View 1 (tube, rainbow, N blue to C red):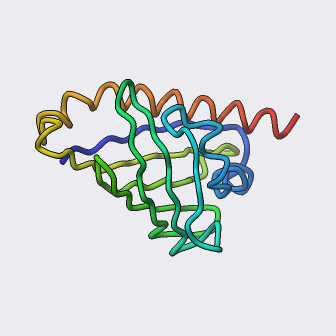
View 2: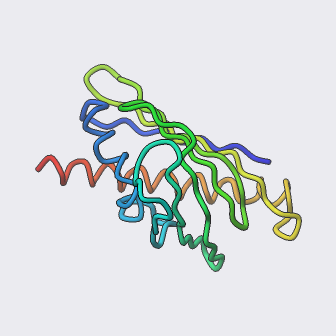
View 3: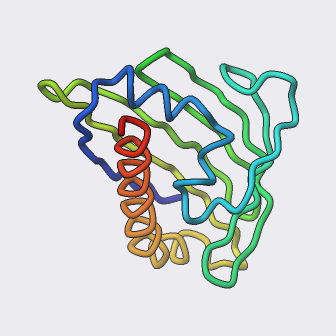
Length: 147
């Protein structure tokens, strides 16, 4: 098991950042590793929402089955995911003066054939860099939406 946390600060208030973040179907727009998202439930937001996320990291492709496990308006979205790599993730929005800090935390479990805990530690810098880039892309989405 390995844990990864990345953060970004955006000019808009948490309600504005949340208005983009809550749109799970748009995550593939700003997440470089998310190829596509297909909902498996009628609901598309809130606790219990299930979806498949086709993911690509380098040569590795997987279909992750995801379930929203936590949903606090304008504050928190938690998710469990099951695929080649399983784990739990959480987006947390906190006010930062007039801006918003978004914290993205993941706890990941790698299978033995991907090196288990050692593979997870080796992948950590790659995933951290990719997720930082994802948060940059989310920031651009927020700027474009406000323009």
